[in-house]
Amino acid sequence: MRLILALFALTASPALAAPCGGSFTDFITAMKAEATNLSPAEADRFFQNITEDQKVLQSDRAQGVFRKTFTDFSRSLISQNRIENGRANAQKYAELFQQAQAEYGIPSGILLAFWAFETDYGSFQGDFNTANALATLAHDCRRPDLFQPQLLAATQLWQKGMFDPDTTTGAWAGEIGMVQMLPADILARGVDGDGDGTVSLKTSVPDAILSGARMLHDLGWRADEPWLQEVTLPAALPWEKTGLRTTMTGPEWAALGVKARDGNLANLPASILLPEGRKGPAFIAYPNYSTLFNWNQSFVYVTTAAYFANRLNGASVFTPGNPDPQLSLEDTKTLQEKLKQRGYDVGGVDGILGTNTRDAVRQEQLRLGLPADAWPTHDLLEKL
Image (cartoon, rainbow, N blue to C red; front, top):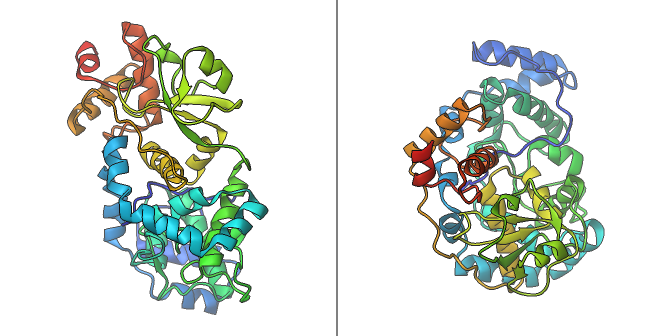
């Protein structure tokens, strides 16, 4: 099951090659002209069978899975079978993961987590025609600046014999292979891990794992540092200091009464995460955690992936606590509308509790004298 929300290109995006919307035929003609790496005959061949895919647009608009709470989302993704398969793959490819750690500084748990969540360790990599998916999203007016360069990058992969517009398949958003990378990222960061002279993220585990490791390295991963750690919190913690906007060192958090459930707090800049408010699970997040948002922008996805990496390394199951109930979809939209009316940028009225909405909630909780843990409640909604 494809779960990624939005994987952003890591290469610089050129100006839009073609106007979004309008005639799809005219759009393809404009994209042919922009594919300056191709001769006219090659451009005709590459684009000749590309069509618009309405199922891609439906998938892009329907991402309700990210409305789940962290507890529900993590339980839906992390099964005992996935844990056992992850540990088995860690043993099977031990030398490969050691190479990824040595060359790029990426620990096996993080790579296994993305491998598991993206494609269930390569067992299902998506059945959307990738060229159609990229063209559809490049033509759509929601994110053409992301997908038009990706469509052009696919033409370069085709020239290298690494892409077939008629047969290459993947996720609805155009990502390819076991760790689901976009064409521009494959061009820039693809690694021939098995030494066969080509990069195949669909069929080669070494290529996929080392390419994913290189990508995370380039995103800014810091070698030999932690990423996420479960903590216990004192009842009197200044809740307004929680959230990704505030960082203090591990010892500074410890001085406020924050304790690691296992081990010690690292002497690194860190933030306190409360995915479901002060009554729910609690974590301390280090710089590497924030790096993962460059791979995926969903708060619950990133937090679950980071936590799953710890579970694969033997960490205990997190303590769920007893959080206040999550607002319904309609109530969350109402909340976002009210926050917009007060001048907050909530990133769209979509019913998803993203970073912008959480930040706005925290500010309103402070204004109203409520515990500022960024978790919206019915009490807050009524006061607004």
